[in-house]
Image (cartoon, rainbow, N blue to C red; front, top):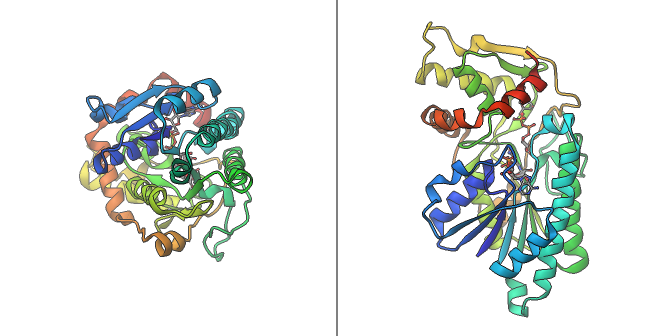
Length: 352
Ligand code: NAD
Ligand code: DAU
């Protein structure tokens, strides 16, 4: 079986769902259920013995060691993290706690367990660390996309904490021969995306008749990847990635934020026109920029394609349509996650 951390969050839950569709191998899913974790994402697995949910924290060393001895996983896929850049600006401590200390605790528990395995089990064991392109910092308009050898230059407390965790993973391979794999992926979008992030926030606000907040001039560029493509890349790296290597994962979809939001508005205008017949784009509102806002991210995903034969299945046009459709069809999910704590966050970040 495999041990997944953070499997009740956005990407983790998509990964667990995809895993259970494509394999019979059991999954142990360890998640602390922070504001970003939601068991409703895994509702379709509730009667499935293949999936076992464990409510707990990756910083809890005793819990980790008991999970390794009890379940004897052949691999760890590590998603659990604090993931929102804006929250890291308001409160960096939780990011150091989970992303740095939590990854360290998980590495320690996994290494102790790995040390107790037979030679054959040791050789088969994998620790896959899910990371981000933000560790590479920001690009100028004419710069080539990030490759696996681009120097690290994280600019936010979030990306600095992810960079620190990547370095620990690298060091565990180099020092102990611990069998690690790291993926550095660009911006994901798709079902179960918490509506604090640009795409789900704008779909939610558009339908609620609220402003669509664009930071600064809206010309910052992100490289968008449909979440199911990210999950299929992780499965492929787990299956065939070379030990100690890192793989950049991306969709070759560089878009300016304003263009992304205008695209959302156009799709919503077709799928669910406003009652007054006006376009949702009238709700676009420019607001104060994010401090230290990275201007451009772009991923060179040729290594994973060349070595592992992975390519994204969705284009931005197909993926974004599926995403908008999913939110229109799952308004109950949105209502359930936009609770009091969510409204407190909006007040803190956007004021009135
Ligand atoms: P998310 O915020 O939606 O989910 C994080 C999950 O981790 C939640 O279920 C939360 O409850 C859980 N968690 C948080 N702290 C925990 C702790 N201490 N112990 C156990 N569980 C804990 O995040 P996401 O967007 O799904 O991102 C998942 C991973 O992928 C992260 O490591 C992130 O850095 C990375 N990543 C995200 C993106 C993206 O675009 N969202 C892109 C590249 C990489
Ligand atoms: O690049 C991968 C990263 O993508 C992941 O590592 C992070 O976990 C994930 O949150 C995401 O980070 P971003 O900061 O790029 O995502 P976010 O959706 O918060 O913002 C996308 C862009 O949109 C960014 O340039 C900031 C801008 N933005 C965001 C929000 C929430 C706005 O203009 N307005 C907003 O209200």
